[in-house]
Amino acid sequence: MNIAAKTITYPIVETFHSVQGEGYWTGVNAFFIRLGGCDVHCPWCDTKHSWNSQHHPQQSTVELARAAKAVSPAIVIITGGEPLMHDLTPLTEVLKKAGLQVHLETSGAHPFSGHFDWVTFSPKQFKAPHSSVYKRVNELKVVVTNEYDLKWAEQQAASVPKTALYYLQPEWNSSLSKDLIFQYVLQHPQWRISLQTHKLLDIQ
Image 1: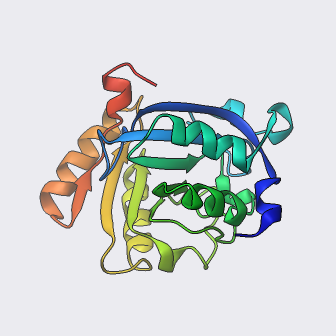
Image 2 (image 1 turned 90 degrees about the vertical axis):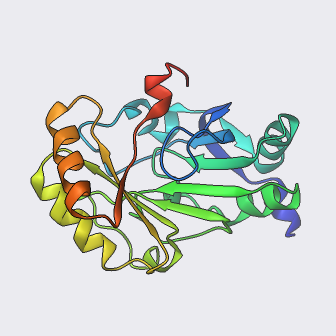
């Protein structure tokens, strides 16, 4: 591992120990590292406080790995904000050196970086995904607010590996999107429904 990787810092909105609330790994013991900075700006975003990276303190890769290792999680999830605004290679090198399984949650709006065991790709129409991300995808998760989002989901599915899992996730405050997804999955069995179970359980 590059020695310099140990001293690199990132803007950290928060770190916390919980369970993964969405997608394939729902219910799994997870340590979250939420990075500051996002230029995608989804109007329904529930973490808008993360958008400006300058509002959040810096932490080193070693500090982050130590905090994650201390709680013995099954997985470590790097999320945001939009984490690919940062070079994630140093952070993932240190986390993996600590023996941790590392996952990424990204809109794919910036070039891919880092070494991951699992990549959840949640592309947004507000900022086109970078081409380098598609081949890395293990899980495609599209947030649905209207019928056009379903077309967008199919367009994105055509560009990810055939081994990827396909999820549709309703926008939390939209009953319409829940009905759209339910009916769509009944007619398109290759897709699954992802729910934000952490909100249903009222946990972080």
